[in-house]
Length: 323
Image (cartoon, rainbow, N blue to C red; front, side, top):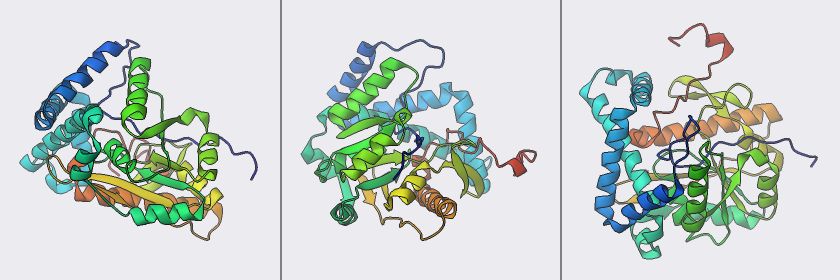
C-alpha cells in the first residue's frame, strides 16, 4: 500500500472537560484536587455531586442548553414544548455529570468493582477478529460512558487499546485528560493530528484502535448520512481506512442501565462491502451512523445533544433552514 494521506479523526474525551476558548488555562493542581474530591466520596455521593454539577452546567450554559433543546425537538417533534422534553433535558445533563464523576473516580474503581457493575457482551467478536491478525478498528460515540467502556474492556483484552483523541485548547486540561486516561483508563492516546500512520502501524501489529464518529465533520472531512431524519456530516475517514485495509468496523457502546451499573456491547462487526471505494465508504459510514442512532434511540438521555451535530448542511439544503 502506498503512502496514506492524513486521516482526520474525532475526539474521544469527556465532554465535561470544557475547552477554554479565551486562552486562559485551568491550573493542573485544581484539576487533580477536583479528582481527589470525587475519589474520596462514596460512589453514590460522587454520582450525586456529578448530577448537581450537571444541573449547574445546564442552567449556566444557556447557549448549549438551548441548542440541546432544539436538537431534541427536531429529533422528537412530539416533545416540543412538553414537560417530558424538560425532564429529558435535565436527565441529559445529569447523565454527563455522572460521566464526569465516574471518569474522575477511575483510580478507585478496582477490578472487582468493574466486573460487578459493568457487564460486557460480545467479546467473542473481539477474539474472532484478533485471530484474523489484522487488528481491530472500532468505533463508538459520546454516549453512555465511553471512557468507562474502554477501562472495563482493558480487563478482558490482553492487547493494548488505543484511542484517537484531538487536542483540547487548554493544554493543562489536555494533559490532565490524556494522563488520567493512560494512568487509570486502560488506554493509550493517539493524537489525530499525526494522521493515519500511527493507526495503521498499530493495526498491522494486530492492535486495537477506537475512535468516535458522532460529531459534525464539516464538508471536507466527511460524507452526509441520515441521522434522526436529517443529513449529518459524518467523518468518513474510519470507513475509508476500513476499506483500504480490509478490516471490519466493530461497534463498541456502553449504556448506563441503572444508577451505578453499565452494559458494554460489542459488535456485531460491520463488514467491508464489495463495492467501489466511494460507494463502500458511503455505505460503511451510513451503517456506523445508523448504529449510533439506534443506541441513542434506546437511551436518548445518554447522548451529547448539546453538540451542534447538524451544523454542516448539504449544499442543496443551505437555503432551506426548515429542512
